Image 1 (cartoon, rainbow, N blue to C red):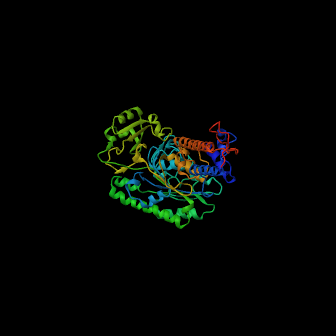
Image 2: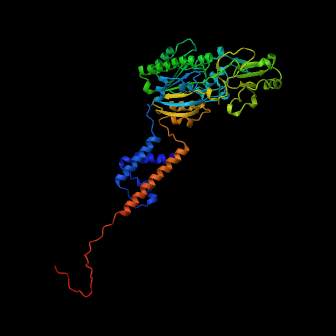
Image 3: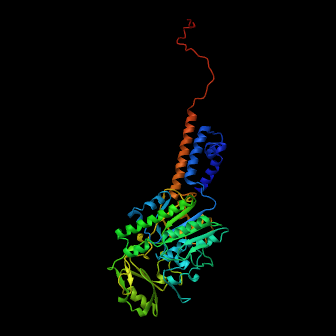
Length: 494
């Protein structure tokens, strides 16, 4: 199909010189066949419409800008449950991916790093919010997150962007942006501080995007809501979550208003997404490890709903006790973790992994810590975020059912004109969102080819029929009078 489009594009490009359309069908009709100028124009017009729909050219400027925004814990179906006016306006004038299948485990640090590297957690090394590296005998926690040791297994897009000549990156508290990854931080960044207001973060980002020389071409913006409130209330508390999401929607409106005020709205590509969703938890759905195994047998590295277990002595003994602990929890030896999780080939993944069923919480012997939580199986719709985008690189009013979190990275690299690092994403999964990309699946392509051939065949048949129906002119012949009677030899005299 791409070959056909390239052929049509070349023909259309010459259309101004009245290239005869019959070149396409001459092999069928023969070298003597001709098409009238009117019919030629009609057919070229039809070709132009096809090309315009499926093979348009980019319209954005030569120095693209991209702003990546994450609202932590923004579950995909919040879009349908709450009247988010500003976000819906953003979507209506841009694109929407209804569900983004994030990476396992569905927690904050791992998924934010997958978005900006295009890698599964086993590949980029940020495998949990709390980690232990047995080879180095080192632990990762919120207080030690800025040690480059934990982040250097991958190269995030803000580093790649700054490695290009005359480009800068900026960040407002996106996880990892205050770390010297590959010995590089964004040119502008804010050290993480949850008490800094959303407006201040937006003000800094828009100032950096608008006044830097060389220009800031890539920027990230992170906000803790609705995740913090989702943990506090749970997603089923619609009364409280409605107020929280109303404020989030107001913040999105504030962001758009600020971009417009400084003249960045029409020339900046903006992606709004999240790291994960949120599930409702209950005190009636607790898995208490103390009921199954003594704490002296293991160390709990990362907590619910995916708990990382480091056995102190006999791994098999610990595994067997946990295996029979609860029917609402799956227990995996590291080598048994399902392939679909892409969560096995890294030394920071512990020998035993516990995965609670949706809505269940793993504790040692505590009461329910949160009414909402995430981290569960990434196949669950409750764990999925969404993605919305607006800007000169994106289509308008276009919706897509689903992509993967790792697909976002190659799309961002394409928009920025960067050579992507090796990654697990698939660009073709996102190309339909982009205005300059051929966007059609195989069944549609086959349908278009058949449709075009039917149209051409019908038109050709009509032309042939019309050509055959026109009577050819005959030479003038003298009127002959019929002789009715051989005996009547006299001519008629009037």
